[in-house]
Length: 310
Image (cartoon, helix red, strand yellow):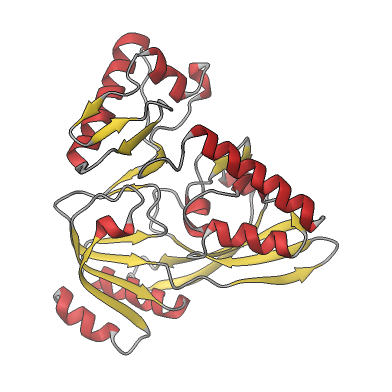
């Protein structure tokens, strides 16, 4: 079994960027986290497949990172390899057959995808305007914005999947199948599959109207305070069986504004925890635990995290 340093030597000839002892706080919208022993940035799908196969073969701990907007890294860092999809960022029109199909690589930002669609006078993605993070992350968690899910416009997904026999990652592709998707869940959630790209079916529209609708959704996010302080957006999923949004539940518990160290349950939104200054991962986890225990005790509700704790 090779060490991280030995594996890194194999990466140097494969169009893979290498970052040793990389500060994960700089890669997270929370601005929290220690260092990764190694962070890599493959430049294409082949390099990504090679890197993932080498990591798995050598049993090195691995975390695949998109935009870092839904992640809480530990202050102790990550003693393994973080694989960033940042360089997989191509966006293009790949087909028109009555409908226009856009292909976006996993590391492309959602902001770039929405802007591309607006410039091409294509409608269907405006609800995702202002959504931080990447296409891969949005697909992985079936992002939902203003009652619209990414699966509502998905056409075909490409991903890398490890072979059972040797762990080598191979490229797979499949058309969207409604039965594979649900609220904040996709065929990739909690699996070893890694999203490489996605195709979206959009409709012809008016560029000015698309931009206007997108701007309205961005303003709605601003009004909710999504950009006021470092955070990871909604901390908990909504559960429709509870009869009201999780943010409302936390409001009713009287927890808005509650602090632990440098972390705070946002005074402007109960389902957002912010880094109010110098917050540690332990501070954030303490507030998560507080919300979960209070909701369970008062209402009998079991809150489920939306953010990924690494």
